[in-house]
Image (cartoon, rainbow, N blue to C red; front, side, top):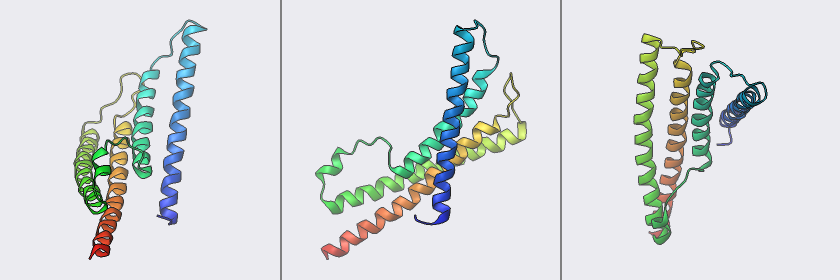
Length: 165
């Protein structure tokens, strides 16, 4: 987790989140000024916002997975002993990883389909492939982090078992 590749990946994710947030802020700011100051509408801004939001949300979700910042309802774990809590964490990590990999396969199939039929947006002709790549990349990164954290949790569980023996 201290490697250059790991740190570079996080820098890229932070950069994408910053860039997409700034783009969203500028577009929505321009729309508000155009609409309420100049009484005109900006043509096709919703398509750019849609593409931008896909990247912002899915890269943000993968970064939240890295940070462990997702919302959790784990009151049960506070009632369990450390070994059972660690086991529950491993089982939950395996389940989350499997579900995430299934969604990753769906995202991949969506990309393959988009390459075949090449749908585009109606105003700007933006290929649907661009926001769909955010789905695939986001789920891939989430799966990557889940695999690493689940392996780490498994090591903790095994370590707790050795301490009790």
